[in-house]
Amino acid sequence: QVQLVQSGAEVKKPGASVKVSCKASGYTFTGYYMHWVRQAPGQGLEWMGRINPNSGGTNYAQKFQGRVTMTRDTSISTAYMELSRLRSDDTAVYYCARVLSPDPDGGVNYWGQGTLVTVSS
Amino acid sequence: SYELTQPPSVSVSPGQTARITCSGDALPKQYAYWYQQKPGQAPVLVIYKDSERPSGIPERFSGSSSGTTVTLTISGVQAEDEADYYCQSADSSGTYEFGGGTKLTVL
Image 1 (cartoon, each protein chain N blue to C red):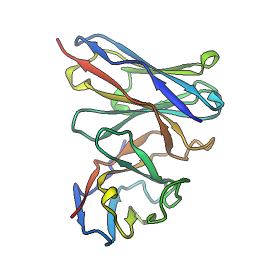
Image 2: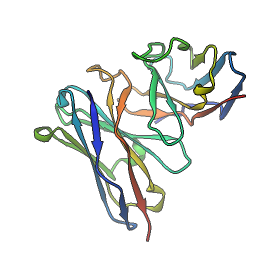
Image 3: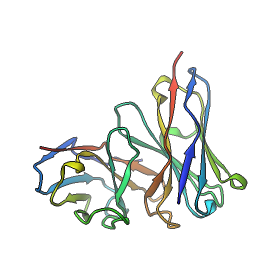
Image 4: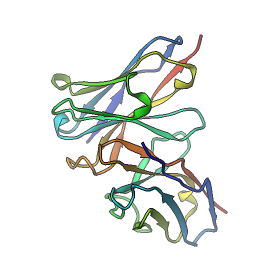
C-alpha cells in the first residue's frame, strides 16, 4: 500500500532554513508527481509546489519562488522540501502528497502524516 | 497566480443536499478538484477532474462545472460529512491554488 512518511517536527529561529523529507513506499516513486501543501494553525490549505520525481522538474507557487526548493533522491524514494529565510508566519503543518495516478493532473490522493514546523525566536 | 472563491460556510440538515461553489476565471479551461478535511486529519480527495470520484468515495459526492464556477454536491448529507471542503485548480503553467475553504455544518 502507498505510504508517505515524513520527518519529525522542527523548531527553527527566524531567518533559518528547514528541510522536510517524505519517504515513499508501496509504489514506483518516479511514476507519480509529489506536491507539497502547508496549513497554518486554524487556516486553510496552501499549495507550495510540486516535483516530478522522474525528471526532477518543479513548479512552485509564486509566493514561495526564491525561498523554496524541492528535490528528490530516487535511490531512496524520498522527496524533500526546503524553505529558507523562515518567518513566524511560516509556522504550519507541512504535507507531502502524491497524485492519484501517473496523470499529473489527477489530483493528490495520498498524504503524508504532516510535519509541524514552528518558527519562533 | 489566481484566486478561487468559496463561501466561508454552508449549513444543511441531515438528508438534504449541500452545494458548495467555487469560482475562478481559469475554471473554464482547467480541471477542479475537491478535498474534504476533518479536524486533525489530512485532506481527502473527493472529486477530481471536475466530476470524477476516486475509489472509495461515496456516490453521494458529485462535482459539476459551468463556466467560471464549479460545484461540489453532497446528496443525502450525513453527520459524518461535516468538515471543511477545499476546491483546487491549476493554471496553464502547472501551478495550483486552493480556495479559501468552506465549513460544512450539518444541523
